Image 1 (cartoon, rainbow, N blue to C red):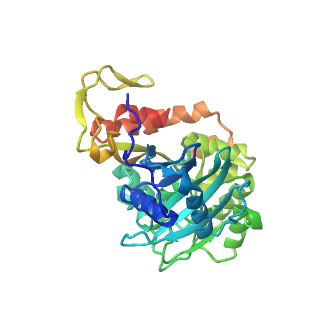
Image 2 (image 1 turned 90 degrees about the horizontal axis):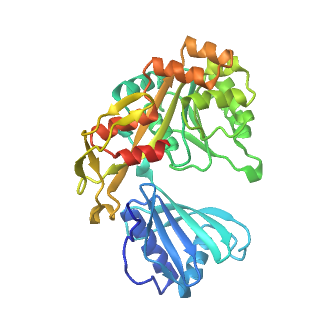
Image 3 (image 1 turned 180 degrees about the vertical axis):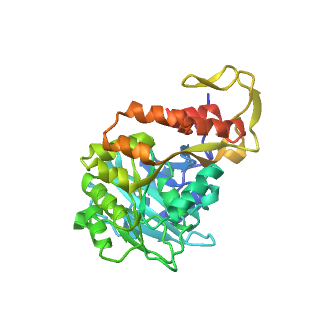
Length: 396
């Protein structure tokens, strides 16, 4: 059984709060962490880093300086330093001795022990190349055709942390922004991209996704990226935009392609609008990659099934995580995507218009041999990229 190891066992941070915060951020960036958690405890401030989706312990901060570190974050992020009873959020930029400045999004949350602070590290280089997302070649080819179309709605779906926004950013790289007008509406803007217009929703000021999307339609857009479809109103506007000559891309918090289609109909939108607006749905998950420095090859103990089909027979060669210094003893280093891709055709559109049951969609996809997320994951197992346990973890 894998345990969550400490990144280091050095003494707690102490001294000047400015230096302590810089050192924590620098360490997080150097190990490619996505988030920094500063968690107040009775005897210390616990520091944990999210690396490849997993929480890893880091050096704690002594109680003598913990409150000063929190105050430092709040000042830089332009929060109210005196307000400790309500959550706050903001953004800040630090010079921590690295080649480029580090941009972070900060949020505070009142707890019984004090204020917890989470820092999301925003990286310009976090835009992944389209062909490095982990999609099969045939899926890449079909998506490129949809991205070249003048209109339609492309939806990426999955739970929080599945990499949906990164996929949308990768899609934008396939669009010639010098010849067409691309406008985005995000919350928040994760990465600033040259050549496109990016807007940020702000619920507190009334600038919601629905309000912003209506305003975008008056900006003569060719391509619209909506960070997330959160309600029926936003969904309805996005679908109508896709029907009236715009290419729309967005995300939805659903588990797979079938659930995405059914959710949009359940929101109360006319089935014929859903059927005619959507061009494709891409469900995705992120799986950790087995560390190449320490992974070992073993025999599979028993047959690996998916529904009524054996995908991997017992005795097949698979990789198993071991753990080393390079992967912080986790057995994994880096992540890649697994995808389920569904294109809408006349048969699926007819099913949407008649409000077909979920099982009918799934049966049709099985007959067409559309690869489910789990089957796509097992493909990565067979090629030695990830492990059975990791695929089961993200697809259960």
